[in-house]
Image 1 (cartoon, rainbow, N blue to C red):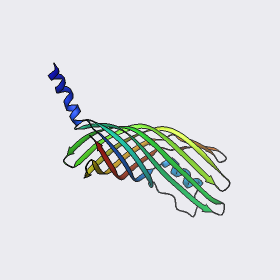
Image 2: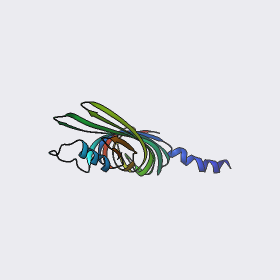
Image 3: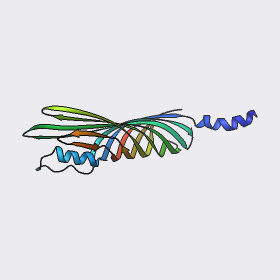
Image 4: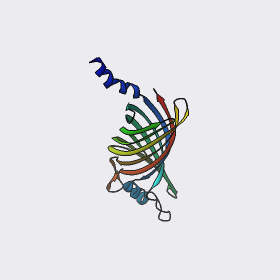
Length: 206
């Protein structure tokens, strides 16, 4: 009986390890309802409309537990920040938004000497914050939603247990909405579709 228990549990012990990743990158993000609101309420007729996709800075951190040599599960927290500003004879106007995106993740893992590749996805709660600044005042809004992502991560050995990380994400987030009243109440949805490229470091704890 004890040999059966060793057969069942020792493989898990051999492959069990953690990794910790920290990354920074660029999100190419589309927020259709927010884009329409900015084009209608912020820019002057002489200024070009903002495009469908815009770049935003993204920071993320993640930890994973390796259940086996080919499967890992973890928790990621990503933070996206973007802003738009305009100036005219009425003064300066600025809109800043940020998304905090915690997710539970799982991966199929391919590992070898000096490299590690993970392909997977996840889902989680989305917390949104929007700030509007005008020459005569400001407004703040908060929202909550849910989001989904697909991910690919590659790690290449630098030294010891430290690896260079390059990754890409594909996200669809239902970030909630906020209401503004500019004579008539208007609901602005924060739904977003984004693709990102990021660079960082991964440290493996055996």
